[in-house]
Image (cartoon, rainbow, N blue to C red; front, side, top):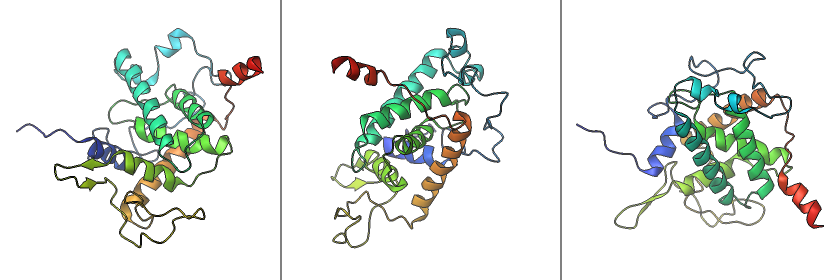
Length: 232
């Protein structure tokens, strides 16, 4: 029998949890498919982060057999996912942080393959956003990104019942969740749950991989800074 297609929520949950995911097990350590960044396989333009057309057309994903159009589509969809996650955090991620996260993701794609069974593009994207917020001095706890994904992946059935991939909050909704007095929403699952902890560990693990790939180089020159200078 044909396999039933996954819903958007199930797909995101599977991809971030690994295991039965269409993308395979998500891991940076102990995974025979994961590429550990070394000096030898660092992106060729790492010092300036400028790449030639030939280098872009020989990215790791392409070397693993992914068609060029599909590789571009994965990059594009992941950037949109980063944007969407940033719009659902509290407070909303600043445009500069989101833009920096997209740049980080593109840099990582020049060292890591995102074909099936290798690195998970959505997980890379979320981890890039988490790291970008730090580099842009916009500190947010990792729970904000998990809650954001939980909200994005919500599915509503025919009876109007909402289902969240990482579970729902089952505690006292009247208890503030943070110092701003924000009240609990259904997608704000407790941090003590196993599903929350598993996604959190995946994000932190991939963040370490990204740090190695970037070689702790967080410098990003956005065009908007020059445009602002011209306008002023």
